[in-house]
Length: 219
Image (cartoon, rainbow, N blue to C red):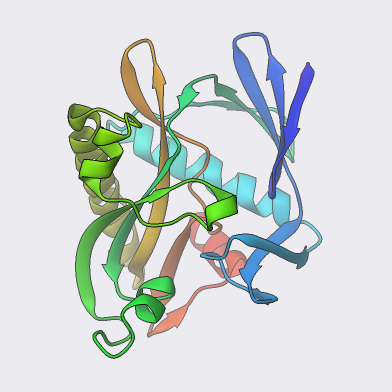
């Protein structure tokens, strides 16, 4: 394997036609506080990387079972998994079922916590700019993705939302929001990176579940 780079939450290696992710124990947050919607490393939590991989493996398999193509191939060990190598599109596609986190801060005074939304947003994946919102027309004009790809990413994101809600509802849980990344492989789009408690929020009785509490749901 050849080391490629070290990200905030994982180290990435090249392994022939595949990528291998090593999930780290780093915790993301904002202003020094833990927050799955945050974009800065605020500390470490022992065993966190293994928990995230448990969830990512579970949710990617759930998506595949329901007809959503992902780049997940197989788990290697407690911290590592193998993925298809795809051309990453530098966007985060965010689905907001309920108003929470940065959406509340952005529209303070206009929206209430947990207000129903059901919307899809795009952000430009650029840490130096703090991942700003980007309009769909700007995505196309800047040639980040084609108009057809934008439509497909939105459609797939809404399909994923339906899959997650169908899984969570019988367990008394409510989807709040999540973010996806997409890549291109052999002319097709697929969901890449991960889907876990690091990239989604789930609530029970108006309280956001911790990473560990969400693991209890998928085990």
